Image (cartoon, rainbow, N blue to C red; front, side, top):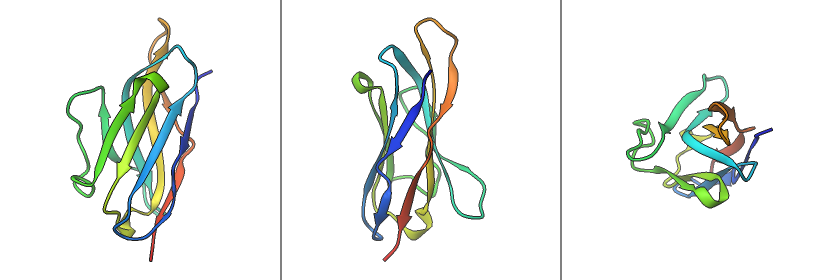
Length: 120
């Protein structure tokens, strides 16, 4: 089975940076599109960046200019670089990947979530 393992979350001061990783299992898994979401306590899950299959990427206005999606195809891993972090960025962050193994149909997969806390 395909699973996404997230890492890179933690506690950071305002203005700091973090890079979240989302690694897909399976050497034959091919990523088609990726999106990053977050959910703050008491709030609904929101789209932060993407979904994107390449080229241009849409970012939420609240993170535009501060967050960036990248990808390492050799490692089947996608990243969310977060700079100039603000307290309102505090949330559990989830990656969502659309992809497939071999010639199977493409499916959506979710990471388990990683906590990001921005506080002084």
